[in-house]
Image 1 (tube, rainbow, N blue to C red):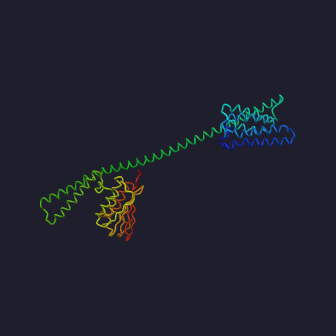
Image 2: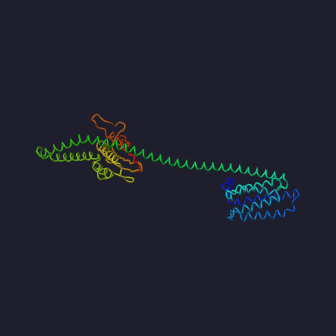
Image 3: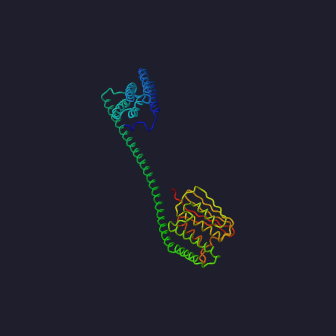
Length: 405
C-alpha cells in the first residue's frame, strides 16, 4: 500500500497544503449545497467549528512540522468522520486519507487505516452514515468495493514501482558491465601493443644474432687480418719513411673499425651511443661530417628503445654522407624533435638537390643510401619522407613512433 504515497511526486510543502485546499473546497461545496437545498442550516455553526478545528490540526500538527505522524492521522481521520456525518460533501476531503495512510503509518497499519477511510468515504456516497439495514448493507458493500479497488490500484502501483526499480538496477548493472568491458578492452589493447612490441623485439634480436654471426665471420675477421698485415709490414721495415704516416692512419682506421665491429657483436649498438644520449651522439657525428652542421633539439629528451636510437643515428650518418658526397652544400641543419607519441629527425641542406623519383641503385652498386634508410626505419615502424628538387636543396624527415609509457 505504500505505493499510494506521494514521495515520488510531491514535496512536504505540497502535502501540507493539499489537505487544507481539499478541506476548503469541501466546505465551500457544503455551504453552497446548504443554501441551494435550504436544508441543514442549523448544522452550519457545528460544521464551521469542526472544519476550523480540522484545519488547525492539519496546519499545526502536520508531520512536516511535528514528528507525530500516527497521532496526526488518527485525529485527522476522526475529524473527517465527524465532518462527513455533518455533511456528506466532506467526502471530497475524506479520500485524501488514501494518500496519507501509506505516508504516515507503519506498513502493518496501512490496510486497516485504508479500510476505515473507505468506510468514511462510502458513507458520503450514500448521503451520510446509514440509518436503516438496507443502507448498512449498501454502505458495507461500497466500503468493501472501495477497499478492493484501492488495494488493486495499490498493488498495480507497487508492481510498477518494483519494475522501475528493477529496470534501474539492471541499467546500473549494465552501466557497470559496460565500464568493466571498456576497461578490459583498454587492457587488451595495451596487451596487444605489448605483444606486438615484444614480437618486434624478438624479431630484432633474431636479426641481430644473424648479423652478429655475419660480422664476426666476415668484417671482424677481415679487419683483424688487415691489422696483422700492417703490423707485420711495420716490423719488417718494408715501407719508406714517407709511407709510415699512411700506414699509421690505416692501422688506426682498421682498429677503429674492428672496435666498432666488436661493439656490434656485443649489442649491435654504435660506439657513439655507448654511455651517451642520442642528441649528443648526433652532435658528435655532425662534428665529424667535414661541413658546418647546426644541430637543434626540441621537446623533452628521453631515452628511446635501443633499436630506434640506432636507426635514427644511422639515418643521420647516412644523410650527412650523402650531403658530403653529392649535395655541394654550404649549410646543413639537423633537428631532433621529441613529441609525445613520436620522434622526428630533420636533415636539411642548401645543396644542388635532386629528383627523389629518379634516385635508385646504380650499376656500380652505389645509390643505396635512401633505400637503406627506409629499410632501417621500416624495421622500427618508422617512415622516411624526402623533399628535394634540382637546385632547391634537400629536406629529409625520418619519423619513428613512440609508445607512451
